[in-house]
Image 1 (cartoon, rainbow over the protein chains, first blue to last red):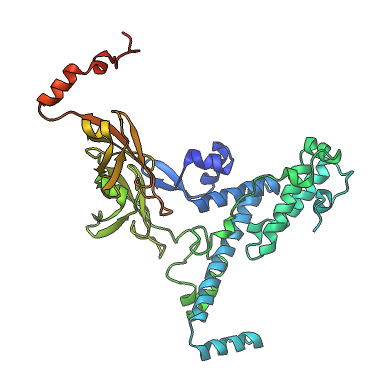
Image 2: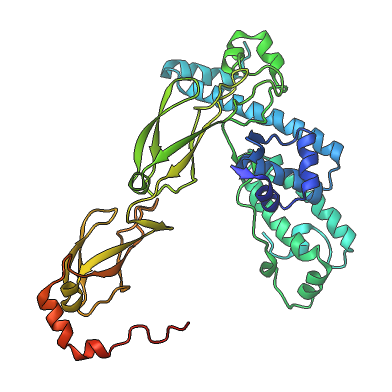
Length: 108
Length: 302
């Protein structure tokens, strides 16, 4: 868990930005007693937001759109992984049948 | 792949700072690893582009590079070690808004995509973390142990205390916190450890310090004595002529570290006279001229 001050230092952002990002719902720290704490994943997400703003010149509205699409993409990737794992666990003949159907481009 | 920063950014050496910045932003928008989560090559190219911009985006560094004072590699900044995309698996920010409609129409897809849990962005939430405390004995914390903890809901959990646990350290029990919402994963149980003191051991980092009493004859003549350490009793050689305050280092007898090694133990010798007055010792001290001449308080003022 990363505390607020440490998070600012490691993310290399100022407190006002962080507060604004939390306010916008872009980052969701967890409440540990009176403190808000962040995960490594939150930190990587903060880097991404910072890169969008500073390196890519995306404005606030653009960041909101980008994050929304990225979150959907991660949801899809997660679902894809689960689907892949479920297919992988099928008995071999069934798996072969699925593969054959995918190759044929057949839709049910 | 070129190492020339101008070629990497696709600008001419005559480009203005504004053109360089625009070129960088255009490439960053295309290559940023988090915008290309499935493309492993994007990260390498993004790093090259970032390094090139570090050099050329700063007019002063660019001028030094142009004069040949620094080379293209000399300006690389410490690179970010992981990107957002690298957190695979349960992504707390992930949303099903991209495919929720598919699962409405199809039982099989609904099952595969976890219909119960993923209903609208933000509805699936991880449970909150719970907090607890665990009191440990000094040696339990140093050597590691397993403790049974009663949770707020009345259930119990076995807490594995790893060797070398410190006072105030927080142990995380994954999934033992409050239940999640909408099929979200449960939170964690955070257990703060309180370590009691020990009658003779103290701990500094990975090292253990303690006073080791030795008899007058052991100190004067030297010899082998047994000393307790957290790692068990060890035989210690007391050098001939040791004094109170002499520190002996017992290598590898301290606190276990995660890598399997151990810190050291330090025994500070303390000379202890016989429990009762000894006539022979008194007679010796009475006629011992060098002992009478010694002033151990020399240098003490006040």
